[in-house]
Image (tube, rainbow, N blue to C red; front, side):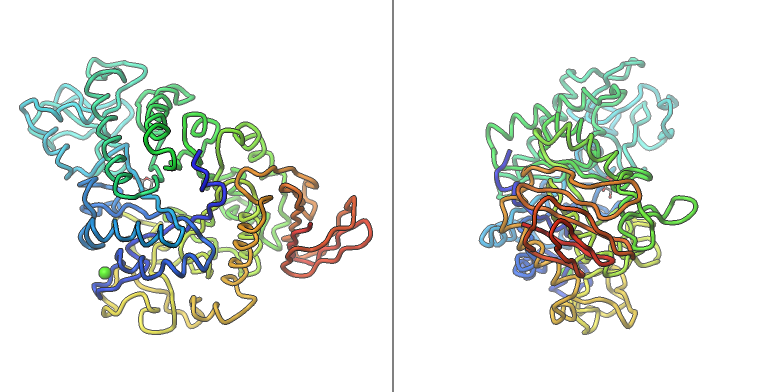
Length: 511
Ligand code: GLC
Ligand code: CA
């Protein structure tokens, strides 16, 4: 376990939309470098950068054309190495996004694999053995290659599945996981990881990490074996490198070697009930909505078994949002966003802030871009100030990668930096507290102190500190065994002899 993860607070950067320094309307590495002091000042000491490799961008870069070369629109490989160095000089670790399950259909491996003549890459992807033979339960992809076969996709049409083999073999073209071709795929991916780690990268967020072996069992044990093998390589040669999975099943991911696993938004899961319950019929009962009459047990019943089963193996990562999810500002107001961040920054595990969520950027209803579809509205340019294009770029408006929020009250870093009680400044205080107290390390103890269905507040203990949150629009109180001292509060809270009184929408850390 890389020690630095214990105190890591991540900042996710969608490179297209962060900061453009050469006026072409698209963010770049130099733009990230110029904002590293901002990231540091926010209290984030780690970055996850979405895929920045050469790509035809049919899925925003998750369709990789060359794993070892960056997309020219962001700069050169040397610029990225410089970014690693500049980040390290500020104590910031950098994760790249590894996409191991598929490549772009324009990747050289795939172009070779499509050929009629057999070659080194013929079995790098999953092909049936006849041009009219599809794959049961999958879209039929034929007529695209000279070879006599159809291929399997991993996500969009532009993303053919790499071949790590099949666990339950049902067809003669399905190879076992120990087939030399499948082992070659895994070794090729390890080679990609080594390449970036050798150039100063600190690890990877791993895309669709559970998708490698096909016809896997319900525990994904064959895919898990691959990750164990990769983790063994890291432990031996890169013990400080971190891998964080897009799996959303920590009982599997952390057991198979990931250091952390994202707690993603799935309808009805614990994370969803905290802030994204708006798809539920009958209204939004999110715990963090002041009028949601939320129920903390909907969260705990899902989260606690996950936490209990995995906290000795690795970390669960709470996210404010990500590039696939509507921004929380879509349904939460600023006060609710403050409480959300306060909660995520004081729970165990390794938290992630998605760029722009620290100022409550809006989810915009805009047309799709680069395969984003409804995700596009969460990928708009960072709003730095009130100048043209919100300081993101000096390109003409119609040349921007995506439009910025043009509303009069579009939040900006510049405005919020001036206001001591802004979301931005509240987050800065919270990250500072998180770094200051050993009690808030990713692996420091966690215990639920008070949680009752449809009651407030929710109280938990981290190390020797108590955290209480009352997100509702009604005041609440809870009895406490001793008289505590306040470390930090949002809203107003009062400590009486044996109880804690909390105003509507308040939060407090007690010592
Ligand atoms: C992951 C990414 C998403 C991408 C997909 C295919 O879910 O987060 O953005 O489209 O994988 O790579
Ligand atoms: Ca640029």
